[in-house]
Image (cartoon, rainbow, N blue to C red; front, side):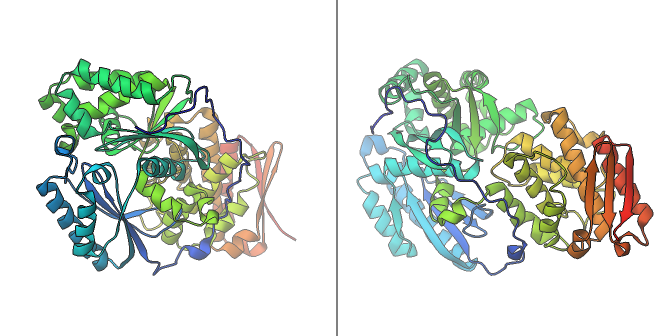
Length: 523
């Protein structure tokens, strides 16, 4: 058991200097090809997984994922060693992963190992066998490192998160602090992974609760108060998927899925009451996770009872992404993950990648007093504003809305995800009452819906006016005054489609609640 949290600690914000994130949309990198792919292999206590990312960068986009269920932690508590079968399966998995990585042109493969490998007496032998078979060097992480990188994964995946990060793996549970852009100095690592808790449950639910509660009491002081708990780990991601499926949520994306703590505890208790056959049959339940779901549910429920957070936020990013984030330069770490992800996804799909940055500048006057949090949503929306140009015109609004709800963006919550999807729906002339908008649109308040519609209509006008030519757009500007909306354009830009441009300007005026609008030529 490692060092516990300090008594009386109450930290909701970082005391260090806040560094603002740059929100530039760099189109120069949009068409960059030939950057080497990057891969990381995580040797856990339950499974071994390789993720190949498009590149080593601020918004990691998985290109390929493969997992092998090796269950290195099976029997470890009794024998102190990794079983022969688990040993063999792991070496074979790493040999295969290396062959795939080589075939994909991956130039760098990092390998980390956690609880089972560091505890097993034959862990060093496994690391050497892997290197002999695959040529890959294994970095065995200590508990402090595992907690640190898991917290970094949350920091990399959310917009300036503040809260506790709990990562439940196959062999252990790590808890650390995410404080905006840094990991707090307090952490703990406990033997409360899926496999040891599964063994505890064989002694009975009440005995397992007693054992878990005692470990948590000894390590997590009751005076520790942070309102948000970030839940990391495959078992808890499946927990979220099952809950989303049963609730039929409008945005079924694990990353950023947020629930009040009381709802989490109630759902965990529900899962613990189900017999195995009913648990396995739940929608969203992966077959390989059904066996350890009671353990995941129990630990989450007891952890919440101990820490008393207001809400739980599920994270799709954890140790692997934290390790990746740690490899970046300081300048790269301070890039906004949402803007970077939108740039990497949106600009290469656009007819003219450089039009996105021009659109960012052109829409800058739409919202006086815009906050940085609002600016990043506008910039990200501009980056993905031309993703559907190849689609059938009648399908663009609907398809882009549905697609953007599910794209692998990070650094945003579900409400912000809906905002971006709605803005692009309106950019493709979608109607405010289109049936596919609901119920997701209900996550936005009235002001958010209006803002998304204004931004979308402005982008629609910009594309019609300029034909996606940045030079044309830059020779025009919006003039917004009380009760009137004007579009000042060069004579070339207005003719011969002034009626079409005026029609798009009218849509923007309606969205803004303005009756008087006109297109005027520059002199």
